[in-house]
Length: 470
Ligand code: CA
Image (cartoon, rainbow, N blue to C red):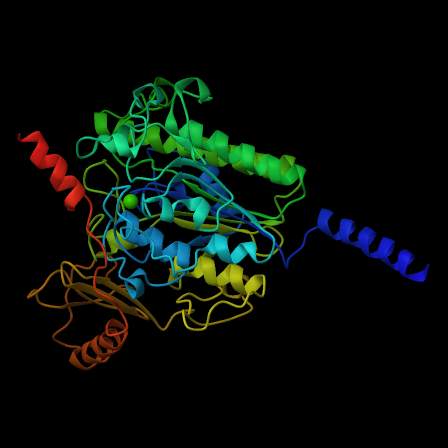
């Protein structure tokens, strides 16, 4: 009898707790844009594209001024974020080829994703949007810890839903045609009638909202990876968004602005949905781009040097903001370097999850730094490597050492004084240069060479190519 009452008490107190803020078990939403410029959000000074909803994440939480991704292009950057490990530890050095028959071109199966790890704490996870971590069935999100997938397995994608006419990746007959494949929900190919909107960015936002609403209804802890492909090329936007920018004359910039504006609407709807469901305070929200603004989409990285693909700041430093109401104080502007690898390390630490010690995480729990509980820099060093180009970069405090390609001279900058990397001060800092190079070398020997064929350069593609020459 006594134990029965105790059980009722436990159930009741559990219900009470779940309805309140639970700082030990927040939901996680990561909103990732694609090829968005550092200077293309209001909180980094953008003037011609209003991004009030994205900005609200920074203003209600932390604006990460020096937020980095682990690689300056899509696939490897995502592999780093999703495992919380430098992707070169497992040879993910480049964008994997898009070939559903290739069972090595993707995130190695012995690496654990953030979704797999969160599952151990009863989370339900969804990826909505761009996957880009392998197209063979082995790499499918549902086989990598996710409970729900709505989007496309490849990299870039057409935005107009009525242009998605190719049934699936197996039917792709030419390079880049995968941009026109129909969306998929889990393993199902969606038809035009299944779409709720006529524009991909809106479609992904809607799918994200449906997932959040469903989890909230079930009082279910969740992780949503809302992986927009906007504002990556092709430059596609609908009149609804284009009409917001009558004053931008440059056509490409105007379309880019419209694409970003659509994302901002989606972010606004996500934030509103969290509020409506009473779970805004119990959700940790991270916004970032997968790499710096690209040279071909009219993005802007000002004042940073370089673009997507570069080891200069313009390739690696991205718009980055974190909101966790009730935990991170509003209007926090954080200037120490933060990495996309820190997202995994933070949630793992918050939830007290033990990960495989043989596969150590490379990030740190960033939350205590953002709340001011911990002082100092979270990272003594951040490292980058572009294996194919023999390029490298390392940041240590205010200093950055880099080399853009094999046989190029190494360059050395003081980022605090020279954020645009204009004045190479290698000559007067040889001791510091040697010290950072030595640390990078120690890191580099732990890494693997590339383990799979790069985008469009594999037997499948070559086979199709040779057929087309027949
Ligand atoms: Ca990208």
